[in-house]
Length: 291
Image (cartoon, rainbow, N blue to C red; front, side, top):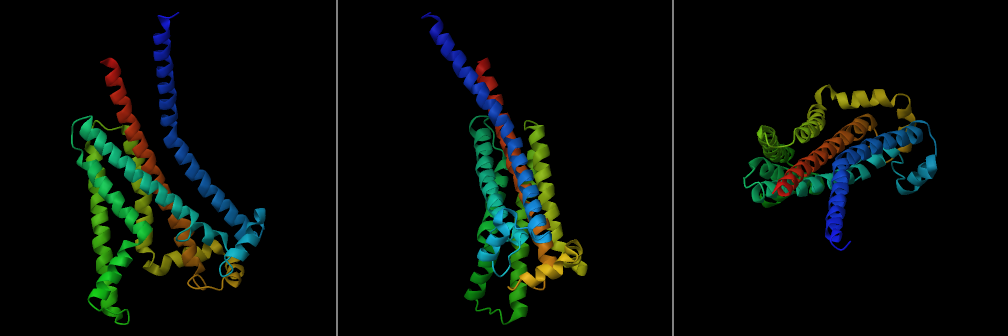
């Protein structure tokens, strides 16, 4: 009995490790399930409250109190600084930490420098700074104040804003694309992780293309007006604050279409990084066991 006790302890530790690995292996899929469920629930609430006029769970009355100028659930759920954006910011922040972890695992355990992970860390840091702190606006304001460029001189101010946005998005795009290509090129990385990462990039690309082309033919406003249909008149009567008043169709697409795409992109990226890290951890664990 005494001789078997250390062996039982080892088996117990191995059982706990296996259970932990099983939980970790399911975590990426649980995150994906959470986001898909969240988006569907938000869409359902918006449909019932905004389109059907239901006071679902008292949310309609609550919105009239906390958002008297625009008591629409789809604005509350998907606008800037909304619950949707907070989840997205959280996932980008977690992705930043996981990407850094992948870099350090490769550097100190696999003994190689993975430039793809380093570029992804830089890209995610820039993305988080832009999404959370609006660094492009702060940069424009700083340069404008430094060189005394007033918004009243719209020609110069608009050119400055365009230049800053082009430089920032070019740098962000370059970092993210180079990171993706280098990670995909690495044959030692998880194939499943690569597929999830590409999917995350796809959703972000779709959101970016939609945003970049929304002024062509004013298609955001046209499609938004079509989707709102006859409900637009009733919703417009509830909205008293700008910039939403008179632009409901445009903002409907900007919020209800674009924000979920970005959330899906962030979700697939964080899920992919978990898969990459778990894959590396499993490889390291197998190597240690064999020794």
